[in-house]
Image (cartoon, rainbow, N blue to C red; front, top):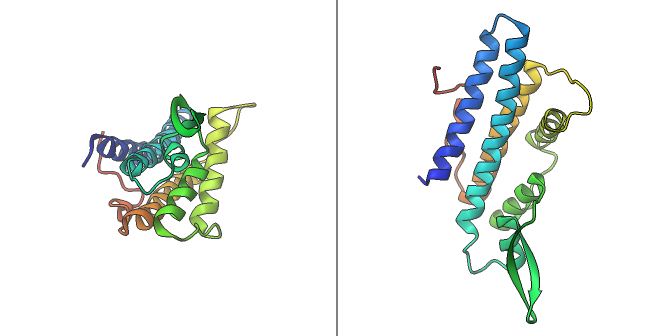
Amino acid sequence: MAEIDEFAMSLLEESKRFLEKARECPDAPGEVAYLHAALMLAFCSLEAHTNAIAADFALDNSLSVHEKALLLEKDVRLEDGEFKIHPSLKVMRLEDRIQFLHLRFSGQPLNRSETWWSELRSAIVLRNQLTHPKEAGEIARGNVERAVTAIIDTLNAVFLAVYRKGFPSASRGLSSRLDF
């Protein structure tokens, strides 16, 4: 297993442990802090897994320059009459990268009517409220549990589409291996 894969898994395990800690926390401010940590680490894990999958396939010669650039989040420029990947960062929406990976490597478009997809979209809204606050928002344990579950389900769907096998820890759901 590559170092990035291990790191991505550890982020998810930390997220799930913080969610467990939130359930155990006797005071509201502590619970909220654990919920914030759980949500953010779950998204960090999703990003890390997506980047690891992208890196696995970025060298595939069957991909076009534009497809490679999308996977690597790099810009494409026309130089000397040829499209080339430029080292400058070009951030892509996470949802777009997930849909691309699914379609490109399974041959089937992602079914956006799946429950996990709508839950992921709700989770992104929740994450954005925390990451880009415009007002003090409230966070509920049930919403974070659904968000982390959606991320696990998303990873499972992407792994099935790309690798033809499920996400290794999907069967554990929200149970963490950590005990801090």
